[in-house]
Image 1 (tube, rainbow, N blue to C red):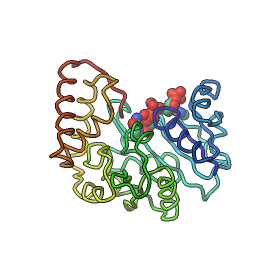
Image 2 (tube, protein in one colour):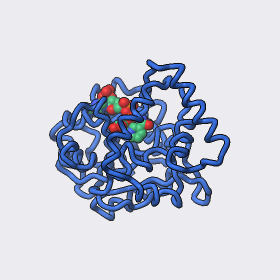
Image 3 (tube, rainbow, N blue to C red):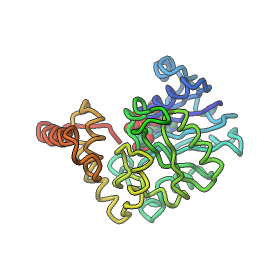
Image 4 (cartoon, rainbow, N blue to C red):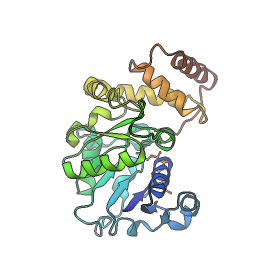
Length: 275
Ligand SMILES: NC(=O)c1ccc[n+]([C@@H]2O[C@H](COP(=O)([O-])OP(=O)(O)OC[C@H]3O[C@@H](n4cnc5c(N)ncnc54)[C@H](OP(=O)(O)O)[C@@H]3O)[C@@H](O)[C@H]2O)c1
């Protein structure tokens, strides 16, 4: 396949690496031009292109940039994107980073808003897994701890396409319904980043409370901001699992919670980029 990726940060680079290993052709772009992406291209085997070229003729377009940047994407970005090629949105809304977005404040899910800005349907996936787990967390189909990821959207064929791609990458995909239901795994919900298995994921989605999600998200953002940037991502996953009632009897999980507490106390002004 030919896959275009807009955004070459934590997630874009991790995806480019996966797709390269799967022998797909990967085009990658940012806002500053291909000359600024030579390192990412070299490390992942992707071809750095101008943003005006990244959607042309690709089988899948992935948008993985901060949400505040979505409105500044070129207006003719999607002109060369075949009508049948899905757009996959990994975005998360963090008001502290993205500013206030009225459409989301008025009740749209984050990806419904992105879709409305782009003027085309999108599939939402890969927003609720940290880039570290994305890089290192893939596993064979029969693995008991295989991570499951929700996939939502209004086009069943496009969802199946994305679910098959996730499977190739080492993850189970779960059809989580239409895009209007994708709030169930936005930031601040139980399914946000605990790396659940296919058995665990449905009840996390079911337990999501839309009225509490924004408050939980902002609280979590404050905690993350106190952590040193090198705080191990896997300890954050363990802590997330504990907080949603998974692995509560595992000593390793308790250790992660203690470590999280000490890191916050030791580094009250630390800054993290994990969003
Ligand atoms: N970090 C995670 O673990 C994680 C996990 C799941 C989902 N997410 C979400 O996925 C999205 C990307 O996250 P990330 O951590 O990969 O972000 P990141 O590391 O900050 O990278 C963002 C990328 O987007 C590019 N970009 C910014 N504005 C752009 C524009 N107008 N046009 C084209 N490219 C632009 C940036 O390059 P230039 O600034 O040079 O253009 C950069 O390559 C965010 O919405 C985030 O919340 C993050």
